[in-house]
Image (tube, rainbow, N blue to C red; front, side, top):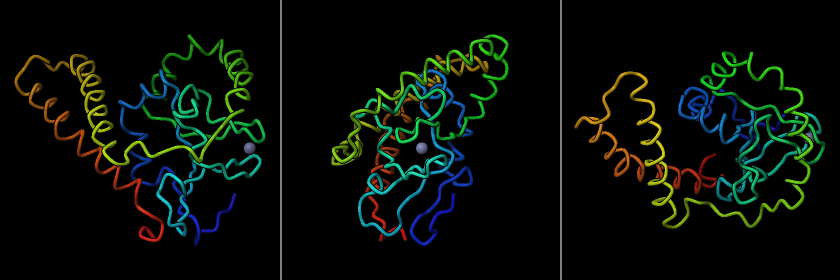
Length: 212
Ligand SMILES: [Zn+2]
């Protein structure tokens, strides 16, 4: 698919944020357990002066529909359970997605266990998809980082990341009941979280005219 480069900024794995999604091992949990997926290609309308959330699009390479990025969102109940990729409600095909490196490693190692069931699992998953997209609403979706939302989102992110680190540290032999770890996690929750929330707020609220 070709896109009007004057109108759209194209996001692929070459973008640092997308690359972070591939490399951060913590995000394997989002993919494997929650079924969160990121499309291989997404677009940002550079010419619109709306907030970021309202001008990001996901193209389907099969039917060439430009889907509103909010089609797959928690509000629509479609942000997760997308283990086999993003379902295109227009043509019923699957929009290709990126895969986190750790996810790929885990899936490769455990392939002998789940490989046998891949076909039937995928079939069953596909059958459930059309119903999930019957009442998709994109205009009502608000930016979770809007207003003071970034504080809540920031703290949740800090706490979730800390929990993941508490699971991960013992695996690589780090003692979790040490002063260093406690200080690290507290600063992650109290400083890192809100900072992340605030950066996301700025990012989502930037308008096309400013970004261009
Ligand atoms: Zn399609």
